[in-house]
Each structure stands twice: as structure tokens, then as C-alpha cells.
Image (cartoon, rainbow, N blue to C red; front, side, top):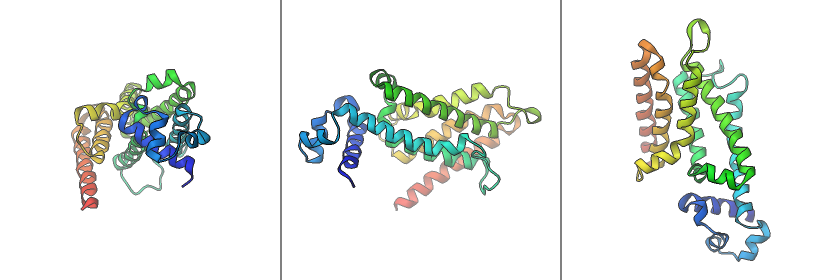
Amino acid sequence: MKTSEHILDTARRLFNERGEASVTASDIALELGISPGNLHYHFKGKASIHIAIFAQMQRELIVLMGPVVQAPGLFSGTRVTSDIETSWLFLTVLLEKMFQYRYFYDSPKTLMVQFPEVARGFRRLLRMKHKSCSSIASQLVPGPGGLPHPRLPNLTEAMTLCLSCWLAYDPLVNPTDPDSLRTHRGVLQILSHCAPYLGDEQLDFYRDCEALYHQMIHEEVTALD
């Protein structure tokens, strides 16, 4: 691994563990076992490290969400999974990737005010999350006669809000839970927003989501054994 990559990985871990505002460039250098001058050779201060980490996150999230917001989208004809399972798997991968950069979601407004580059990129990612949630909601909650559901905008907003804020909310309520449980509980909460719009199918949808939740948790536990 290149020194610059090692610096970014270490800084991201420290920012996630302690919060970006609580970590100095000297802290990063000390953790790496290098001199502040060596760190400065690669990155001209903590701000440049922070912006580089955001650029890294933005690239990785765009790669994940790009195929979902463009044709043929997430629900192509080549799938072997149900609509709910396909949605679950995508949201799981997305939340897991967001979790790797979770300090950005602790107080995004503060970071956006401080760094214009982050503000522009964060809004771009938010639009892509909104489109991703709209795609999922459109598939899971169809409207009458093949038309979009009349409450699709409200449903999309609720799902996007949950997706964007979950990593800040859940650790406050369940601080000792393992990461996998936090992720799958987040996916369950996001998809649960669809159920009230499904009429007679509402209970079946809840049951399918809960079954997937327990299946995913079981698979995570089994993999650790």
C-alpha cells in the first residue's frame, strides 16, 4: 500500500472512532509512526486529508449507485432474486459502504459549511440516494394501472431521510450493537416505509422483510463461527 493510501486509511479510522474535529494532523502522524513533516509531504494538513477521504467515498458510492439510477436499473430481467431481496441486498451494500465513512454522517451540515468541495459532493450523493430510493419504492409499491403511486414522492423522501440519517441515529440508541446488526436493522427500517402503502399486501411485506432480516443476521453470525 502506498504511503498516501495508508495515511487516508488511518485518518479515516481515527475520524470514525473519535470524530473528525477531535483528531489533529499530529495525531494521524503519531498513529502512523511517521513525522509530521513526512505527513505534510503527502497532504498539506488535515483539511486536505479530509477532502481526499471524501473524494474517495464519493467515487465508491457513485460506483454503487450509478447502475441503480440509470437504465436498466436495479430490477433488470436477469435477476434470480425477488424484488424485496434485490432491494435488501443493494441497501445492505450501500449502508456498509457508508459505514466505512460514517464520520461524514455525524454532522454533515458542519462539514459542508467548512468545506465547499464536500458540500457539492454531499448534495450530489444525496440526489443519487433519492433516485435510488425512488427506484426501489416504484418497484415495491406500484400505483394503479401501472402508473406511479400517488404517494411516491412522500415515500421516497421518508426512505432517503432514513438512509441518510441512520448511521447517526442508531448508534445513539444501540451503542453496543455489532455493525452487521446495525446495517440490517437500517435496511429493515428503510424498507418498512413501503408497507403502509401496500393495502392488503402490507402484512405479507412486513413478514418478508422480517424473514430477510433474520436470515441476514443468521448468515452473519454463522460466518463468524
